[in-house]
Amino acid sequence: MRLNRRLFIGSGAAAAISLHAPALLAEGHGKPRVIVIGGGAGGATAARYIAKDSDGAVDVTLIEPSKTYYTCFFSNLYLGGFKEMSDLGHGYGALASNYGINVVHDLAIGVDRAAKTVTLAGGTTLPYDKLILSPGIDFVDGAVEGWSLADQDVMPHAYKGGTQVELLKAQVMAMPEGGVFAMIAPPNPYRCPPGPYERISMIAHTLKATNPTAKIIVADPKDKFSKQALFQEGWNNHYSGMIDWIGADFGGGVVSVDPAAMTVTIDGEETAVSACNVIPAMKAGRIAEIAAVTDGNWAPVNPADMSSRADPDVYVLGDSADQGDMPKSGYSANSQAKVCANAVRGALTGSTVFPAKYSNTCWSLIDANDGVKVGATYEPTDEKIASVDSFISQTGESSDLRRATYEESEGWYAGITADMFS
Ligand code: FAD
Image 1 (spheres, rainbow, N blue to C red):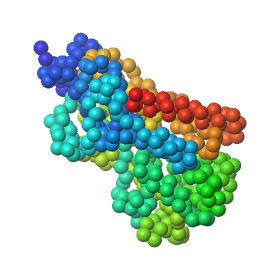
Image 2 (tube, protein in one colour):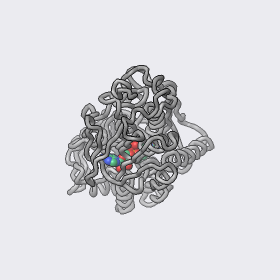
Image 3 (cartoon, rainbow, N blue to C red):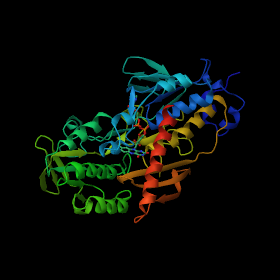
Image 4 (cartoon, rainbow, N blue to C red):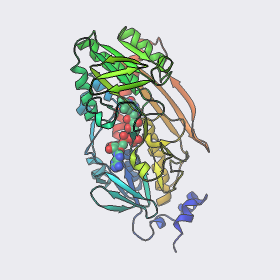
């Protein structure tokens, strides 16, 4: 007996039926096959949980071009001198050896949703029963006047981990005495809402020690930003007079850059800069667009299991997903990946599927031992993943509490990277 797979997946009774019909979804080709594209916070976690919890019953392939994943999380601490780049690098060896995940270091360049195949740059075509996309972000072309991706070696975005972040740090360290560092901040929604402002804090920390007369300008198309009161209090306390944040109300969104001349023009006023970090508007990673599961920018998903609204056999995790209230963070991607892994395993093997619950916390370091955080728990509604309750650090907190918050973030980093890669 064989169940019709399409009807089965579309059925509201899927979870109940699947308890009695594991592996029938494999359609006669042996173990059910899951392909995960992107070995970052969402993808590595999803691959690991599906393989670990299904105990060999599901064939999991993880496609990721890089042999080492450099986390964006804590990359600002590298800019501040609190971490080495080597602290941020993680390999995929344990995923292969501990759980039998087939790790393929290649770039996915095609998805045929009708044929259920993924094509790799190396020429291979792989079939799947369930496809999970967690490719992170790409940048919107033409988002910052005068800047294109070809200029990233002169004015880095440093919004993907690794070499871009190293380049930004080298440029900060090479600034002449009293030079100007500029950041072009991104519009909402974007990866890591507090990220640009933690970055400003960490660069100020570095410049205060190496180049105390340097200035920092932030041109921002937004009129407010994540943890703003906490950052601005911290900037006054630690880096007084160094940081000029120009929000939308003061022309912060009317910006152009000239990488050849090393100038930034904000609301008609041109400034010569020694280093410039351009963080353009973002959209879902390109492969999500190629798979035709985006609305042009982000990939709408069902809040209960992160499946694509365009295709029940495709799931989109992390930054690429348009899911509702969760910020685009590594913590969110990891949380979504566990919900997705549980749902995918349930659909393929008949294991129990638990109701989705999500959570997130974003920590930021403002100065040594001055850590702050914001977070929430979330549950799915019909329309979106909705915030249930939230918390945020307060201005004026004691240095003991701020230190404890920073130490908590160190524990989180160790925990999430183990949850992805060990
Ligand atoms: P990623 O982790 O970026 O993973 C995507 C992976 O997909 C990459 O490895 C990429 O190589 C791969 N990929 C892309 N396209 C393809 C393809 N076609 N084929 C195969 N592979 C592909 N989050 C936090 O929770 N806490 C923090 O403190 C924090 N700080 C941050 C600070 C900064 C400066 C930045 C930039 C981000 C920060 N984040 C933080 C956000 C966090 O890094 C992202 O939200 C998270 O990495 C998203 O996970 P993801 O799986 O969606 O994407």
